[in-house]
Length: 351
Ligand code: NAD
Ligand code: IPM
Ligand code: MN
Image (cartoon, rainbow, N blue to C red; front, side, top):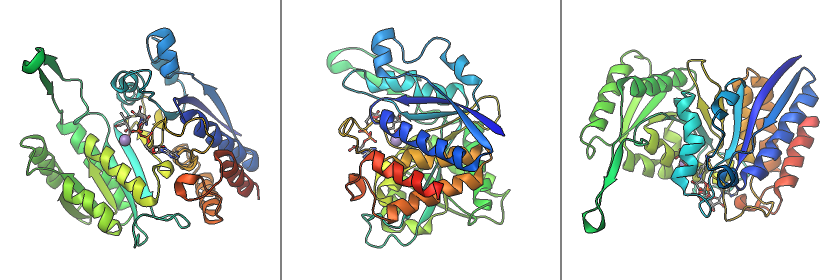
């Protein structure tokens, strides 16, 4: 019997609807398998917690999380109560940074049974490797002066280590897939960091002579995600470019409610964190109609990470069957609730 101890942070908004759904799926997987169990420990850290305590998590929160095998998170953000940059930097981004979750992997593929906004989605199957620790997301900078003299300076940080790490991860991943890496650049308009990114990409690619490489400026690349996503295998992108690309990846699948993600710690010093691409969706929160499959597919990525690939595949298959059978939440054209969709996935797992 193997036991997996998982820290659970539902967070804000629909995080509190889709995380319980995905935990039901994980518990069903354990029940059916018989050889594994999960011990979930819930942490109620979110914007309400901030309003009560003045911080998004307790002082020793990271210490507490460190002993878990993985972290399973819903979404963070309730902009009506707490400014986003405060809530996100106080919890989600803090965990990503402090736990050195330097890579964010975000797959997107054609899902049978969901109407893609693309007329010819052509069986695309891609994965974005997003640099997750630096780049355009930085606290380096500041604001000075008032009135019409106001200045805001925001520095982007690109280290050799961080850049090469993400690019190398993409090449290693491509070697296990279709052997093609695309670099997202913008070296025509961004004067320092992106020519540097291109150089590191070219140098690193020399270690992988069998891998096909492409490089596109992010604007053209974003358009290709819409017009011909089937040309891509692995795409490596900076933090912000990867963030934007993966919402497009979600959109061409048919909904942001489906897209999964994993924040990976590579050095083994801290747990990795599993959290879907979407946010807390304040506009639909509390209505029981949030699509649970982004969180459930994210649970599949966590199962893979825990060495339970076979179970992960079962979850994905059950999820795809449920979608194909027409039991779908409104965002993907159905009228099922979060609960109905989740129950059907669990029922299929038990078969
Ligand atoms: P969002 O992803 O929450 O919502 C965008 C749109 O997609 C909304 O119309 C929403 O209803 C819909 N949507 C999202 N998830 C869905 C689901 N599972 N099922 C059905 N529809 C879904 O993005 P936003 O509106 O820009 O952000 C809302 C809040 O979430 C903000 O505070 C933002 O900072 C935060 N956010 C957090 C994360 C995270 O924690 N990982 C990610 C993105 C945004
Ligand atoms: C995501 C989100 C976060 C990000 C926000 C909420 C800070 O959009 O996980 O994609 O930009 O990383
Ligand atoms: Mn995002």
